[in-house]
Length: 307
Image: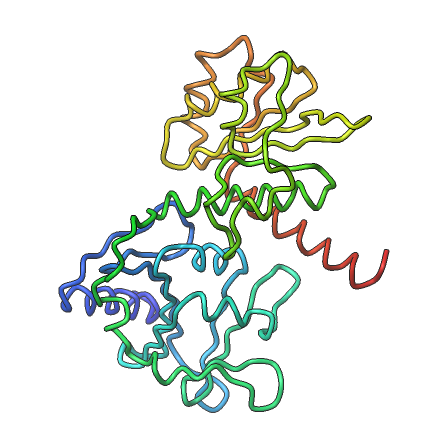
């Protein structure tokens, strides 16, 4: 017998379908995220209420951050019935995340009261969710902007670039990325990177070097030395990333990384690049995201205790 949460999940998708919305799963994310109409929607389900009609949901920080960086993102909290669904903009929830309790693993406890408002820290502190109850029109309304919209793959590519820049900054490297206008957590990557331009290197083709997704440099005697370089392969072929990183092959101390969710494709490419295979390392994109969360938590802990 199917669990009630699974039944409610399917009923939600059926309701969207009955409203003439197109529905496609977003496979670059590990959570239940779907493109529904013109919106990207994370679906969370609570089959039953507890504690005087309250509903509880768990959302990992990494998942919420990824949602907030997608185009037109929403989170649907199904509270015991599809007719009691709060469809809230993901960026609104993300903006209030510091006011929600979480555990050591970055799992946030989303608590909806009997009126389906989200409970925040402090007495009678709430996000007013009344405008979002069964607000199907929010995810189904046509977009009016004429600007070119990013795909989920493009958005997650920028998220991973931003995370790599943040990790490099935390570790004390000088950081570079060529994608100045892409954004991560409402900041341009150019504002996160500490280098405006890529340093020129004697044994590297500069036009290729300056297009590598992220590079970390150390500073020694006023010279910038490349230490680690990263190519992110979410929707493009791994060949292109391996080829760009190859411009640093003559710098034997530099570690070269392919960030991807497709280890099989990576191995296929490296089989044709066997002479240099030992110079490269595959890192699963989910593992990178876990590392980023840990680095942020450690930074916050160091700041809090002053060591």
